[in-house]
Each structure stands twice: as structure tokens, then as C-alpha cells.
Image (cartoon, rainbow, N blue to C red; front, side, top):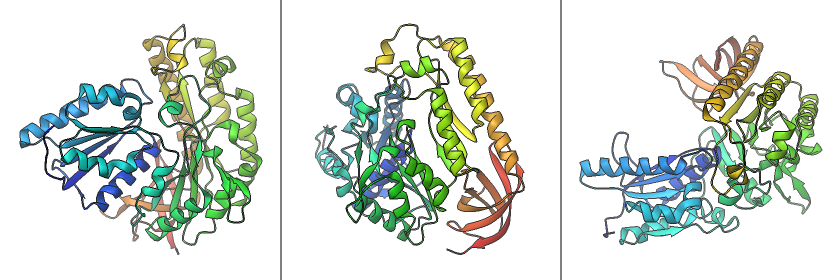
Length: 447
């Protein structure tokens, strides 16, 4: 690799989960601190960061495809950009990427991206370099202060996972469960609000496992952190994702009924309605214990909207076991849910299990599951017609005078009115569609 000029513009392309979105935002902030600017729309960037996800099949191949497109576009411009591969694919397959893709200047894992500026300096000097070290939480101390925020912001509070579900690569790419300190999180939350955030979503691979010591030295869990953040002036809404049923304690359930700023929405993955499949997945819950847990949350907050994750076609899943998943969906009535075909990930126990389900069977089951989920989402939206609620304005719509935002139940709402991004607007939910609702503005709520 030959020395090159320092990059003046960048583009960060993030794939996958909300934590990757957060990481991508923080990398962009670091680049901004170095005086590197976002590339104008339609122009090639001097530096491209591919912030990758390793959850789905062929994730690495998609990375190589993106690298090829960047090289081809650079050839037309007469200059290939500096390319950095970040995220979980970088962590899992960094050495192979460096060997297979000479156009890549840097490979950096999700726990080491705070070192990206120094890696860029080396790349500019012609040195290809890789860093997939996994320092416990050290990166957060090195990240720049948040100076600008969207109305709805992410805040990573916990990383890693100790559950070792047999299908999942997260424990290998993100490491063991680690909680960020309480004081760091309350400080970052206040700075986010000062920078423009009205809503904060607390993120973690297993966010409900967060624990720490509050300002009095008392041990607290996620509920204690939520209650502390609810005291931050100017913060109107709190959400959290993603949780594991094993870590949902009494205090967190109570918080849903007692903290007005905690939105009435719970994303709690179940993955299957079959107890045999759940055991094979190394999930610690049963279908019945999951349903009973949801009942407790609904008792604390009766208007709670529920969301979940499902995997169809896990090795050995029979038609009868898939029918148990459909029955669980019917029993819950999800406001929304996410469903995926099983994807064997190298190095996970499930990848070598017998009785791998055929792709045609998975395709057919996924269609049936998504039809049931879409049915219930539309029903939830229709049941919201006639409600008045606050909507956080997040962006402009496609038409003049149109605005888009989220209801407390995380529904997309569009409406027309005299308002601005970041406003909380009281809206009458007038008409429901499958994926959004039309609202009529009642009034703008004071900050």
C-alpha cells in the first residue's frame, strides 16, 4: 500500500442492529473531531467505513461485494478511497479480510474503534493495519463528547452477552457482558439532552443485564438507571433494547408502571414457541414462562405494546413445533415483531447440528409467520384509532408541511402542522394503516 493524502471527507455505512447505528455515529463524531467532513451527497468519500454485522448468513460476502463496488467507483474517479472494515465481521474474520481484500486499509473490531484515528494515520503513511482487541469498556472514555444529537438518540449502556445461545455469534464478536458505569451514563445522557435529544434508547446486547452503583454507592439494575435518567431535565422519553427474559426483574417490571417517561413498549425476544427448540437454542425460558412474564408486564402497564424476535427453521424444527410458534404469536398479539430464517454462523454449536431445515421449508414458514405478525400489527394500529397521544417529531415527510414521528408505542405517525423537528406534539390518531398511522395535530407540548 502506497502512502496517500489525509482524507478530507468520509462516509460511514452501518449494517444490522441499533448498537451498530450507535457505533457508526460515534465513529463519525471521531472523524469530525479530526476535521474530516461527511462526503456531500452523490460524491465519493476519501474514507469509507463499512460498519458490519455478522448475525446473518453471507455477511462477509456482502462486505467483499461493497469493497468491490468502492474499488470500481474509485477507478472511475482515478482514486480508490481508504477503506476501513469495522464491526462484527471485522472482529470475526479480520485476518481473512486483510488477506483477501488488498484494497482494505484498516480492520477494526467493535471494541476497538476508538483507535480508528490512529489507524487512519498509519494508513495514510501506507501501512495497512488491524485492531480486533477487546478492551473492557475502554473505548467509551476515548470517544468525543456528544455535541449534536437527533431528537431520538441511542445510548449504549451494556455490551456483550454471556447467554451463549447456540445460534448466536455475539459472545464471540462482542465479548462477555460488561456494564458501563452509572456516572458515565447519566453524564452522557445529560449531554445528549443538551445536544438536542428528547428521547433516549438505552442499548445493549443484553441491556436488562446492566448493573452498577448509583451516586450513593448503592447497587442498582436497569430499573435504577432508568429512574435516575427520568430525573434529567429536558429528557421526555426513555426506551431500552434488547433484553433477555432471564434478566427481567421485579424492579424493571415495576418501573414500567411507575416511571411516566419510560415508554409503554417492550421488545423481548422469544425466538420460538416450542420448548424443545428453545432448549436446543440454549434459551433459559419456556414458552409458558415467557407468556407469564409478559402478563406481569401488562399488569404493571396495561397499554404496553409488545415486540419480539423469532427464528424459523432452527435445526430439527418440525412442522408441529413451528405451529407452536404460531400459537404463541396468536396468544401474545404483538404490536410488531422481527422474524428471520435460521442462518448457520461458523463457530456456533447450531451450525453443526443434525437435521438442518431446507431453505424452501424455511421460506414457507417465514411467510406464514410474517403474515400472522403483520395481521397483529395492523390490528394493534387499528385499536389505536381515536387515541390522543404525544408524538416526537423526528423528520420531515415527503410532502410539503408533512412531518413524521413516533408514538409512545413506537408506531410511525405522519401528520401535517406547524411544528419543527424535536417538538413533542399532541396528536389524534385518526386512521391506521398496516405500518403507520395518520394523525391530526391537537397542540405542541412545551419542552
